Image (cartoon, rainbow, N blue to C red; front, top):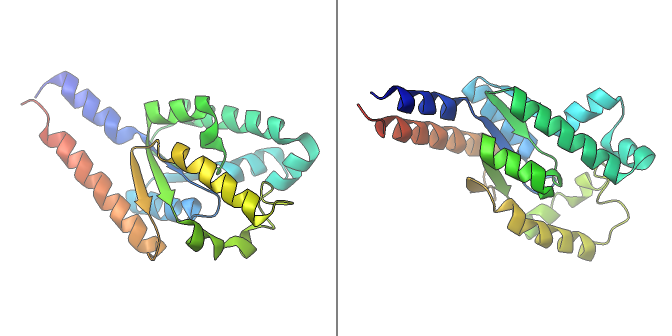
Amino acid sequence: MSKMRSVQNDLFRLKNIVFIGFMGVGKTTVGKLVAKKLMRDFIDIDQHIEAKEGMSISKIFETHGEKYFRDLEKQTISDIILNQSLKVISLGGGSFLQKEIRELCLEHCIVLSIDLDWESWLERFEKLKKTRPILMNKSLDEIKELYNERLPIYNICNSNIDVKNSSPESIADYIVESLKYSWELYDSDRIE
């Protein structure tokens, strides 16, 4: 087997797995399950920032503004992606909209988009609106417009996973099996 091909395969397997998608679609729930099944550490970027800053995302928005949060988010994601491997990472709904973050993730990670149609997402709205700063003081029409604006960006990924009518456990199983299959395909592609 070519030594170069072996190194490439090892690097492929070491890549972080990043979950993207609209707020409240289940990135953290599914990400935690995938991390457990792959025996990797899980990082929710929003929770990581909250712990680091000692305040909620809502409070950060309220105290420092969205620009401060987005800069902090970009720095946090960059530090983790460039300095750690074998992680499963859940990004906040707006972070992948930043070109620098998107390019960094696509270059260094396996990017999986969690997709939930608008009608299914609406069923979660009441639970979400109190904890998501971007939803506060917005009408449903404005939120739907935001949802539709972000979809094309979320589709810039390695794989898009539709989660409608599926349990988090079955979604995680599907993702893990798909990853393992792709790693096996990559192995079989090696030059002997």
